[in-house]
Length: 189
Ligand SMILES: [Zn+2]
Image (cartoon, rainbow, N blue to C red):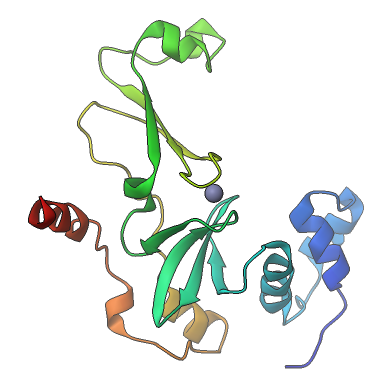
């Protein structure tokens, strides 16, 4: 693919790291037409920052990536911990800390008025078992299933938006498989 360096990879790297000057950020936002290879440069920048080689398909949060590995597409933390099939909510593979009491919530929400009603909801923190980074927080009624924040349609994204279909395209990829996991646990038990 032809390089389009009107917004350079070096600047993109600074943008990802949060050190790009605001004037440069504005230029990048206003660039018209946009540099056609921005997403590919972005992937290169991400790939160079992680300590492993599995091909990044998409970054889904500060620490988490969907990567291609051994014919699958899995969720992986930048520390290297793997959560398995990306169609299963990665939260099921986390260490979870639940805050239920006012004291426990007071440790993280310092303004009393901002605390939620502990009779209705609890606060769950999801930690990576590999590096103990905080990967997600949700405030939901007790017993509510972990919220699946994002299941991207990778094939449509790559084919229709980026014009470069993934080699293993299949309708199977765009499905929430989270409920398969408890079913597997039940079988194992
Ligand atoms: Zn991790």
